[in-house]
Length: 462
Image (cartoon, rainbow, N blue to C red; front, side, top):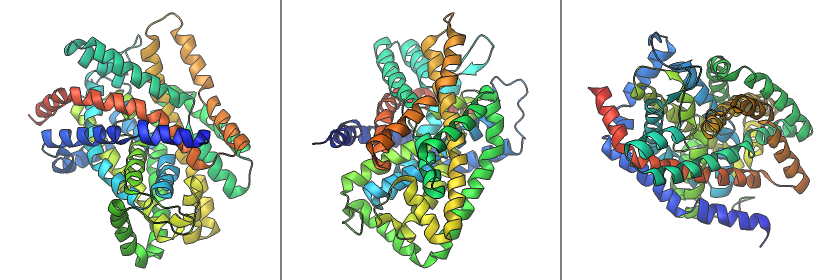
């Protein structure tokens, strides 16, 4: 057995094995039942709340936080809507078959209430630094909610360690830079490392202004970015509208029967479709990962649940709209069985539907998607770093070191992939390994703190 095959077995049979899959689904089902299916019954409330924030009707005066509610949401949405929607979803279909799409949708249905819970708890248990700026996230609600309130210090320390350790691996495995470099290099015939260096310079410019600046940039870029991608994707689907019914039939049939080998596709069992579909859903919309709450915790809002509603909106837009567009255009163009994977597969689907122009448009879009995602991940990891170092005298120096070294491991990942000839599916395998631990720790914490979330939701309704 090769090293890569061994890593694949470890990731898919153990780290992303059925126990983790069942924990995610069970947590989502539990929260769904306890809240009376609030992600469905309260969907219109979440949409109205989001629209109110977009129009600026929800004033920020006298509210604690760093960014406005819509800035935090735009930044979090910019992080979720990124290479996971383009390269990640394509990888799911390439390795799990069209059936993976169904399980991605199911995970997103539960993901809406999971994300609402983690965002709500992050805002409720957030803390302030020496500059009176709010910060929060899983480590904070694990400490205050589980360690202090529920008096379970051992459980808190174990979950907090697993989450921080797993999440910090994202510092070394930043899939965004690789996916952007892959897409742009394949489209314009550039060297991947050259693209990676240019991308890194652009990323440095974005993160140099700190979290407040990132929020303002996200508000300007994210809406344009979403519309840009939707128009291109819908055009390709409409051109192939006659194949749409067959595409849906293939998705639902393959979800329960698996997918036979076809063309360059090697075939996939039902279990593979389930695991890959869930993994890609979580990586894309980040529900249960604990990443988005770190950004939402900085929002200027007068009730935790009000920001939690944004979590429902995020997962809906990310998975049910953006990811679905990617999935359908890959299937209706017939590229899903071509043997391609990652961003290259999505690029091929766009080129099939729109010609060379479509491939160029998407490559530019991937570059923009990647920047908003990478800058958001930078802000998320910074929250974990702040939690780990506390108020030590070296705090400022450590944060400065982190800021200027953050993009560098991503360049190393490109070099390693080029040096050893790793395909995109292998690089995404390392990414999946980095998400398993924080998801496991965070979902367990959410299950323990579910009564606290229910109480906050009741208070908001009252």
